[in-house]
Length: 70
Image 1 (cartoon, rainbow, N blue to C red):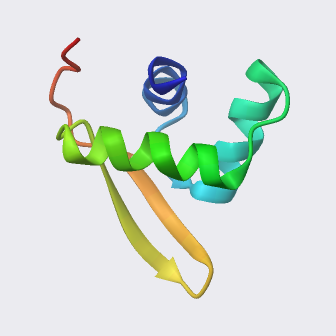
Image 2: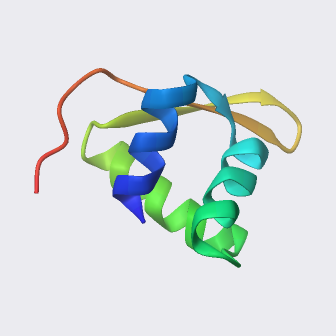
């Protein structure tokens, strides 16, 4: 799923976590917010993307531009 997240962000650019979840759902079927957050945290720790707070309950997800390893 992390590869799909990266591909979506490469194609569409930065987006909110809510929009990203919709995109991932259209590719994978049902994906819980908890699963999405787990993947985002892994990718953020790996330096692949950033997650920053937009407003209460909404976050912006954007790629760092570094290549994904593994």
